[in-house]
Length: 108
Ligand code: FES
Image (cartoon, rainbow, N blue to C red; front, side, top):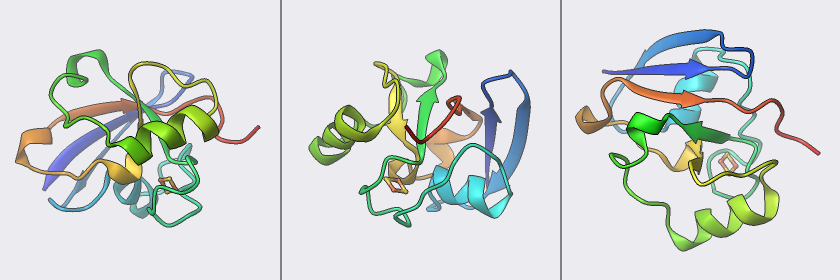
């Protein structure tokens, strides 16, 4: 299991444990963490799973591929350098303790 902390735009933290191999988006959905919609089911096609990586984690997470970068640029609300799509982040031992911030909103 991998421990994940989600912090919402108001600063409320929610902690969950999810199995390795599961995406951060599914970890949120399975634990009813608000702020992640994941409308496309994890196919990198909607950007409603947009999150901000905590500063301490940005360098530790594998870089986004071209499609994810394009989706963040075109579909995410208020993308920042630390933006990621939670459906593209796979949990593993290397991500034990990861912290992500959910945005104020996912839709225009
Ligand atoms: S769930 Fe649609 S892009 Fe992540």
